Length: 468
Image (cartoon, rainbow, N blue to C red):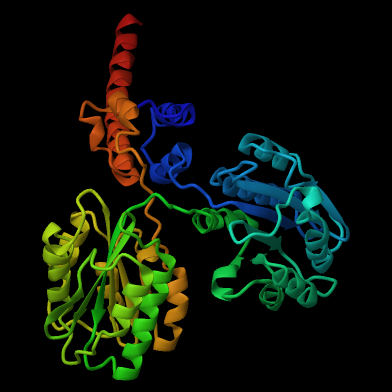
């Protein structure tokens, strides 16, 4: 099956871009967006952008690049995600209505043409405008529905000259989810007054506009709904005596918070649970429960083991048993391991942690209290910063549950990228069963192509010298 032209052009462009330079592009993200593997859930999204005099023209250009990159990751369309942009300073200007552009290309082009207003900072006025006008049906917003999200992303670098607390509360009460991005010398208290709960998820700060692009991935993931992904998820839970009974109850609630975020069904997410201390106990295998209620009830019934902390032994059980077909794991389905511990392992974890990652499992490591961060990093998949979490207090685990994103985006047809693989490799195209594998093959092909081109360039140079 031949993929859509954007993917083909993307990869051809990458070939040209890397003909004389090392491969350094994140192809997984690019390929996923181009191939449409991460469909964004239907959303009415309005950017509210501060262009007051404190924002220099060059900085405003960087804001527009950020907006464009977030838009590139969305599934834009009348029945998918609609995007609007509100520009503000001392006054408010409706740059793009939710009904204005129905394509990504049109939106991005329109964003590049926005000019700064360069006066004061009336953030409250801008939020009120969004509530009254930008999110109105007249401007293209859809009727309020549980199936359609209403989201506003506010970008500001200063202290507002008006009140934001009350108007932000009215916007949230109206069902609008508010994200607040602060830059430079912004007033952090203002960001907290604007943003929706949980604040850890809805407030971001960057030192300058030059690094605002680093937030792009967060918002692409925030809007990503990988409903077609089948995933096997196994929790590996430390039940050692140092956890204590009251904290073990908090751990069970934490597990159920994560289960709530999964699309549990017979064909999509399956969940298994393993508890370990001085020994390993399988609480229930993958596939035993295919709905959230039964899963959560089973988690609540888990009895606390106490005793020691044999994390290495538990990791070996995960790789050898939990993710084996005999343990209920499905062939060809993405595997995710979530390891929780509150202390140093009493056995060696290195070999087992390495084996889990070598087998392609995505490993998350979560530590509390006396957990050793070096061990967490050793367990966690790359990039480590996205796969390991630590908090000193069991009561703060709720924030970790909200940050932990298990978005595994797979194509419905495993041979969807066969044409592109046949262009770059001679291997069986139907081996491409995930974006990650696709990324690896394309990267290898590009690296090989780069070496060949370098060789050709040297031979041409040698021939030119002979001719001269």
